[in-house]
Amino acid sequence: MSVEPASLRDGFPLLAATPELHYLDSAATSQMHCLALDAVVRHETTRRANVSRGTYRLAEAADLAYEQARQTAARFLNASSADEVIFTSGATASLNLVAHAFGATLGRGDRVVISVAEHHSNFVPWQMLRERTGVELALIPVTAAGQLDLARLPELIDGRCRLVAVTQCSNVTGAWTDVATVVAAARKVGARVLLDGAQAVQHGPQDVRAMGVDFYAFSGHKCFGPGGVGVLWGRGELLAAMPPFLGGGGMIAAVTAEETTWAAPPQRFEAGTPPIAQAVGLAAALDWMMNLDWPQIHAGEARLCERLIEGLRRIPGLRLLGPEASARRAPIVSFEIAGLHPHDICQVLDARQLALRGGHHCAQPLLAALGAEACTRASIALYNDEADIAALLDGLGFVLRELA
Ligand code: PMP
Image 1: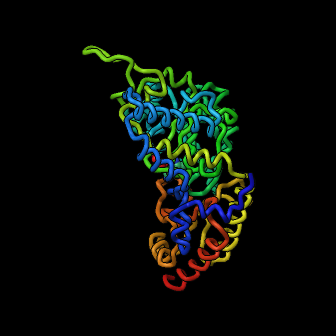
Image 2: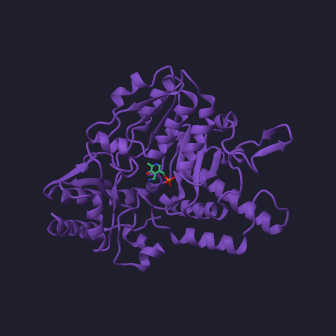
């Protein structure tokens, strides 16, 4: 199936209703596709009931929809079984789940390796694990362009290393991680690999088995689905050996006054009422994504990214953070303008219908490594077009005239 990227905008109700808006903040939250929105409304108006509890037909319909959503997520990730898919409230919850449940199997003398490029949600849970258990936390540094410094892997990923937890794609620089090299280094010492796919999923379906990772986390709101839902995928045998994170309804085999035994995964990790309609909406978004022409979309996104970087290079006093346009990168472009605060830049741009994000992007260690306190970020998704880039470059000219 062949889809013209420019026409994709029509499938997004918010964008269709605001043709004047240049939405360039999809790394924070992508817009929601109409099929996902419709699926949520249909679910809430025809199948709303709690799951895994009811014996009436409405509840059975809700159960079926929820379990079908799990199967769709498994297909999107090319997981070997839907039982390896856990619905969470988002990537942050997924990452914390691994830090607690896999983390419970670690202790003093074990090492967890993360990178300087991590979003705080793949940074702070590991610092908290270190506080709880005394595991050692080691950091893969980044190069001047913000890419993981892979030359350091052999010394960091050694016999003590039990887990390598890294981002698949930086939310600040757009740098893709060379996952194969990380996985190879981890395999050599028997360590597991957790990939934070939060920024990767809006750029197409993933193949966790081909990548050879052990855990994979992402959020629905960053891949054209609803907020409040995310996925943790984990290899079946690892999930089966992990204790639960949260306790509550739905995650038990049996409870007595003395003790509780756990349900098998994925239920073991889904305590309480899950985000049911959100999971159904997410599945609709993933289904839609699985039918898109990704090579064509990637070519369009790369063209816009290049155009943007070319234009930014011509702005005096502007420093680009991250890899070259020609590098393997996602269309996320961050920059500083000497003497101007990103919040001021974003506010002036907002008045010209440009939605961009300014700040530390929940990646303070990365910004520190790149010598910046804050930056302005434009992130491009499949519904953006040349007009968005032209408006941004124009808008930055206006910012310089107004603020500099
Ligand atoms: N990891 C990365 C790389 C991200 O960009 C984000 C969101 N900005 C997260 C994790 C956390 O995602 P969420 O806030 O949806 O839990």
